[in-house]
Length: 234
Image 1 (cartoon, rainbow, N blue to C red):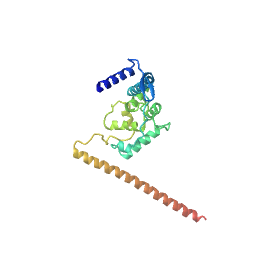
Image 2: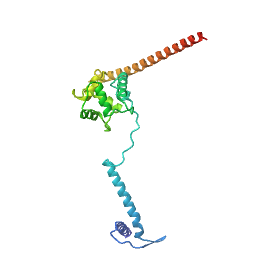
Image 3: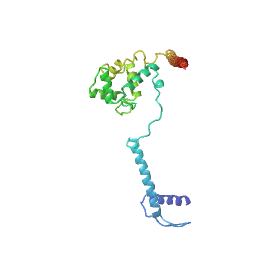
């Protein structure tokens, strides 16, 4: 009997909350509490839930506000390991040379100027297609990472011979033909390749350090010679 009474009360409570039945006053420890006082809170809860569900649906459909961009720092030397440090520096030098606005992007007009300088002018549509082929974030301009993608695709043979990007890579005087992005054929060849890549990277760093050390030593000698010459006139 107790179970049936409890079941009946729960069923009636559900009907009241759904508005299918008029509430009846019930005695409680704090006085009289009826369903009419509960309806606003139930309505508010339903409204809030509906708003959250609608918001979730908008986000799923891409209509909501975009998430904050990733703060991950781009490191070309670790992401583009198929290229030597010198090659990446040459590409960076070229990128900065044509980044006339100094905003770390090459836009349509700057790309137009670049292709004219390389004596391979493109049509407006051709320039747009060049950007589109590597424009991963769809902002209609090239970041340095997207600029490097041009040379990665060129090295992998993924660019059509008559495409503007292939022409750009070919005329840039940055040799990427000997640097493959195609993996080794066997596990052991891959191991040897990885070791050689690591050794080459370390050798390049040591070479750069030696050059800087030599330059610092030469500068030190020039300062000493200048001081000696200066003291001779005192």
